[in-house]
Amino acid sequence: MKSVMSNKWVISLYVLPSLLLILLLIYIPIVLTGYYGLMDWNGIGKMKFIGLENYIELAKDTKFWQSAWHSLLLGLFSTLSLVGYLILSLILASKIKGANFLRKIYLIPMLLSSVAIGQLWAKIFDPTNGMLNRLLVLIGVDNPPLWLADSNIVLYALFFPIVWQYAGFYIIIFYAALKNVPEELIEAAKIDGATSIQIAYKIKVPLIAGVIKVMVILAIVGSLKYFDLIFVLTGGGPNGASEVMASYMYTEAFSKYNFGYGSAIGFGLLIICIVVTWVIQKLLNTKDVDY
Image 1 (cartoon, rainbow, N blue to C red):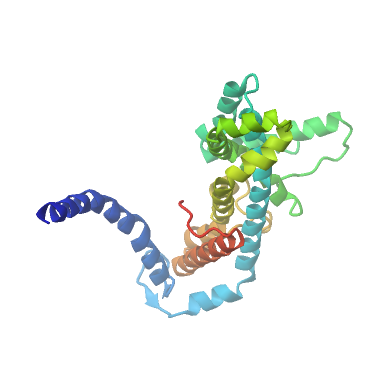
Image 2 (spheres, rainbow, N blue to C red; image 1 turned 120 degrees about the vertical axis):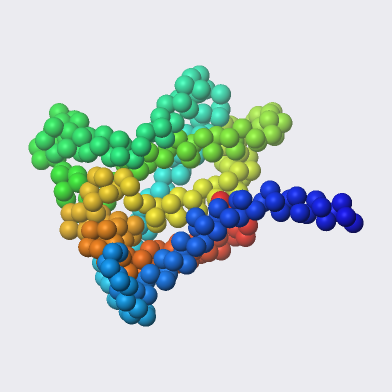
């Protein structure tokens, strides 16, 4: 009995530092964010308690809901891009020549900071000297788009650098899952005359369905809190056409010095992420998902 109790104390001592970090870095900031949302505060002076005014204003704020819609659209685009990532992973896992080299190539964007990626794609999207518009002119397009200045297409333009940035992460996860598919099943299917495509969607994909579900949740929830690349490329413009919830929160808190309302936006973002995650889990029949 003493041995069991002593083991529990030892385990508790090992777990305690992690619990303290989670408490200090996650749960306490969440509580403080919700608390600051009850205040009228510029971040420097004295806080004034105003109750739920910030949250009531947030519920009526059309700009916030527009930014939420933009975040959900990016989540939808990111989810659709998982199909392409999965196809590339299936190709890489099929023992094609040069697969190791290609996997390393796809990982390169993960080694770059979001600021560097933003600067790179800003040059690509440049309307005058950018590589993309120069290519369009060469193939006969007279008036190529103003990718980051046109409110009708800017959000769709941002999708391409986002897909490029995170391709390596999703591909390597899918690839690792596919390599764990039992080789005996694949060999048996080949003996029965199954083609590579049939093996892919009847054997490999069903066996990694759990991983796919987790990737869907990560893609959507990650898009809801996306900030850095959009801030570098557009700052939420033009005229809020690429504003997402995180960039709107930053603008209110750090540009307009309205920390109380910015905190309310941050807390609203948290609630939306929780609700969306719950809905996705229900739709995918996923009860236990490890993040």
